[in-house]
Image (cartoon, rainbow, N blue to C red; front, side, top):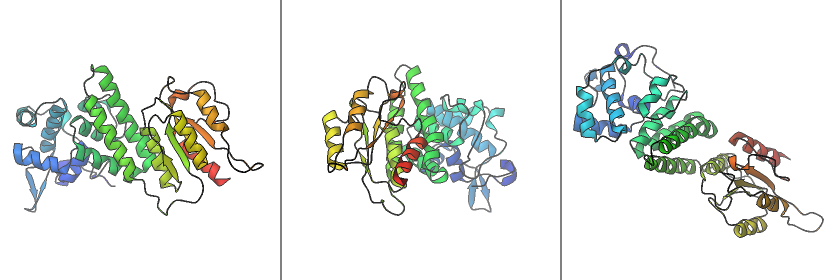
Length: 327
């Protein structure tokens, strides 16, 4: 998408949709704030379309800051309208669509999350999550995946935002856990919405995806599942904490081409289990087959597990499975 090359005043202001994408606020929320609290665009173009000026955007920025702290919208709007503008409120240029990159620590402070040097989409997503704005979170996730592709959106938008929310929760005495839960749920939903192979699944045995027993962190595995489905792999996703007996039975019944075992922590990663799965075989005598076993996640750090492959990133897991399929 393109960007405006000139400041807001010279371009005639921004549409509500452009402002919504920048701040991570659903357009319906902006219209509601305008109608209820007077937080909205004042300028008109050609007597029809209302456009957001730099001043309007500065007020909205203060409104977003205040609501992200938990202040009720009505009180936040009152303070946002009466607070004096600062030089930091005035953006030099404004994007017409979702920008790909916006640098600088000052913007990170507005969300209340330590995001660092990340894509602009992370900041919008973080603001929406802090406000518990489900519609905006969905819209921003779908836009990031559509604009950048699933793998890039996962690595450069979703993961940095999830890590920042997790750090906020850990450092604030159990506050913001609802933000992490809401964001995780909507990330999972967005990944599931991508589960459509462009030209259907290719024939062949499936890839089995499962968290090891005791492991409840499924989002990275869901991202891999979505990426594989997108590439035409037949996938069987078993999710969190699959018991040993169930995992063994599933492998023996399906004869998968590969098994991916996810472990977030070393306390759940089981080397004997991974080696056991790698040793399962099926088929007629003399032509028996075994699955390719990928041990994925930080829990498998350390010495390699014999008979397995350990990808260090989403792309490496995809490449390993693509290589297996091409043989």
